[in-house]
Length: 274
Image (tube, rainbow, N blue to C red; front, side, top):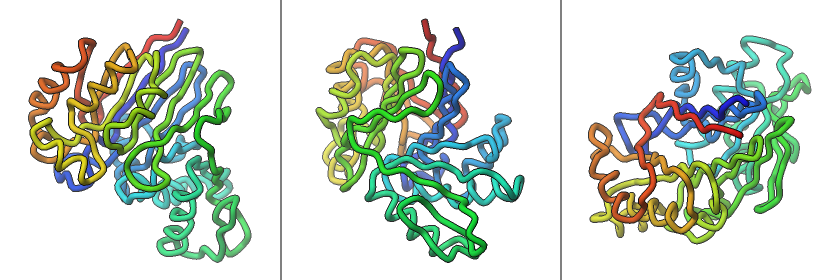
């Protein structure tokens, strides 16, 4: 059975100047490709091209929240898809109603020739739809591929922020999104093969991280330990640790005994399926 392949196009925190902003490609065992968050600007297009992934190959986006470092790339991705194929189907975006409301405002503010948005997506003046979106409810599964499902769970960051749990061929991968330490993330991650969790800083600056709606590396590891996940990958890394992530890993090892790694831009992780 094919593996799940996870490619980190962007792994930097919002103010990180050395890494692209958050975007993660999940290539599922059944051939379904999902984009977890869209980074900012043209990062998904630039980083994706470096590993042979074109904007036209992204059809479904799972959005965690509306901050620009996670949502800002969507207008660029959808625009490039239409540039390659004027008749391309709308890019599908799944998120909470709060995030989708902000996405609609971003489209009206940044895209040329966009006369309208509604509860189903965004449209050009000729009536053609270039973005389609679906509001999700926490804990409700949505079908994204023949053997791929996904659901959201609350994250402790801003109103409407969520994480995502993806199941493909019976194997679970969880992405925390931006969040403080949260029992809801641990609950959603129970038994997951892989937890991708943000780690803004070391435990020494945990209060700073929490004040900004983020987690320290140790807090990410505590979630992994409570959930009993098989592996932890930390991401959303700030500038002081961009070149050397070992201090983050060292803190995490104090709380979680399993495999731990820190993602860099263009890191690829594989998850075996039965």
